[in-house]
Image (cartoon, rainbow over all chains, first blue to last red; front, side, top):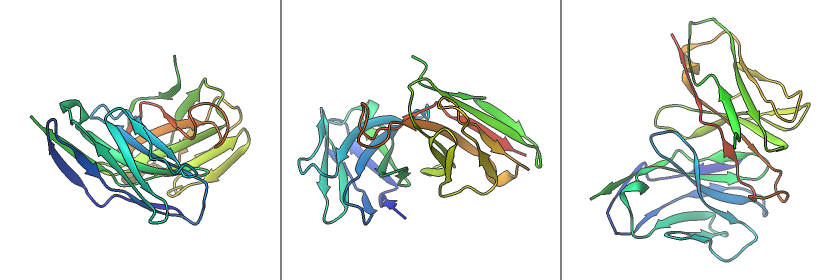
Length: 111
Length: 117
């Protein structure tokens, strides 16, 4: 079964600085999707960024970018110019047929 | 824009009671899912469905049942509620991989907080 591991339960970043959240996953498949979701205190699940495994180019969405290392099964999220509104739980997820989530990283942004 | 609608949003149950969490989506998605999220934890997959009449177990199916009689609805049944089922439950829906817009993305409801006392 696919497993997703987030080894950083908590991370902290200064406003306007850059932070990287780590994620590794285990799969024997070659075709799949990877995601980062953000969950603020409202509990809403908000898609941050997606990466198709067949694409070598790393995905970017404004201040958010990923470092996708398929051979290493690593998928980290970089948040640039951190803002107070970025404070939330961040979940890494793997999707093939269903979607599996990591345990999450709680990001604190200090003003 | 309704998206994925879950009811109820909050519920308190006594041990041994049963209830059904309702989930409906209006995006014509084939795939639907139920997750639970315990405090400070990630989402664990309970059951999922790839279409009407087809369901399959996820990571934590014990104590739950599902049915999928229509494309739109995917109710989750809790039989003989136990304190271990105290959690926030999320329903989600999506297109199959490789089809439709928003490739691979799951669309989530707002969650249902269930407490079993």
